[in-house]
Image 1: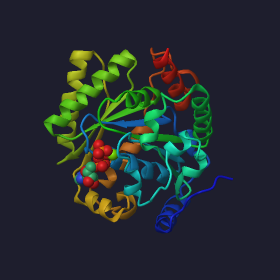
Image 2: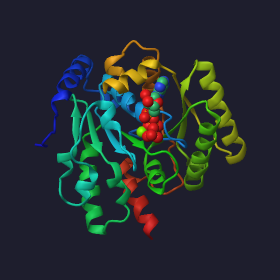
Image 3: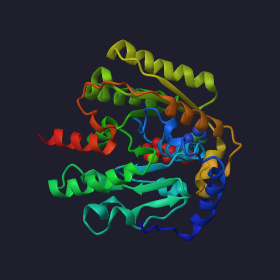
Amino acid sequence: MNPVIMPPMMDDQATDLRKLVSSIRSVDAAARISGVKSVAILSGKGGVGKSSLAVNLSLAMAELGLRVTILDADLGLANLDILFGVTPKFHMGHVMRGDKELADIIYRVGDMISIIPGGAGLRDLADIDDQKQAWIINRLSNLEAETDILILDTSAGIHKNVLSFAMASDLSLLITTPEPTAIRDSYSVLKSLFQMAGSALNAGMVVNMVKNEREGISVGERIIATAGHFLNVKIPYFGCVIWDAAMMDAVRRRRPLLMSEENSVSAPCFRELARKILEFKETPERSDGITAGNSFIGRLARQIAKKES
Ligand SMILES: Nc1ncnc2c1ncn2[C@@H]1O[C@H](COP(=O)(O)OP(=O)(O)OP(=O)(O)O)[C@@H](O)[C@H]1O
Ligand SMILES: [Mg+2]
């Protein structure tokens, strides 16, 4: 059995979440995921809401009865723990060094959500020796087999590992705010992804901190039109999240919005986004040659191997 680290302040949250999902967990929940089993959340600019999206999407999906694993793949300052109100002692770096087993570093929130604190440890994934890499990949694969959907919270920008995570995922959700610099930077990420994936790019747009839905659509369409014009790809618009003062309260309280401010204006946005993602059908043929296995970890291993050869 996996040892589970459960600091005292999580008890409350675990109970809340269990209550939330116990009535809706159904045996055919996994069958609802037709295509997307891994989602990487990316942005060009920092601070646009990736971690908030990862956390609240995971809760919205857990509400639908899905087992969710969140990989904190922010290579710099991982902060999912802050948003969930947990204090991890160990992270992927300890697993990489062989000090800990993967099972020792995983946090559980209720029965449905597992968090893997990745942090700077993941930065080294491409640089460790083959044997160790295979060992880690193997453990992550076992974990992936026990989850319905994997969500990756990444760092802003186009670090090569972030791009590898995106390429290995079924879907890359690119998030921006209406701010011109955030829009411009999100297009740069899109361009880098396109250079790697070509027309098989599996990316979608989310616009955060909007005044209303109209603003979200208008910002999303600007980026989508630019991508259509210069890259000749059609990027789907997944939706928006309304600017919500309750988001900051949630961070301050270290309790995710969907657990503490259920009736706030942005809560339905996360639920709607979760539904759209689960309904999204993956492009059947990807030209990057890394489709085999329909497994994020399998693809990631191939990405790393490709980079080295
Ligand atoms: N819809 C929203 N309305 C109001 N505030 C928001 C909204 N979404 C996120 N925020 C706030 O914006 C700040 C940054 O959010 P978050 O940490 O999720 O961004 P990030 O993209 O993960 O940042 P980083 O690039 O540093 O990892 C947080 O204080 C969060 O509460
Ligand atoms: Mg973040």
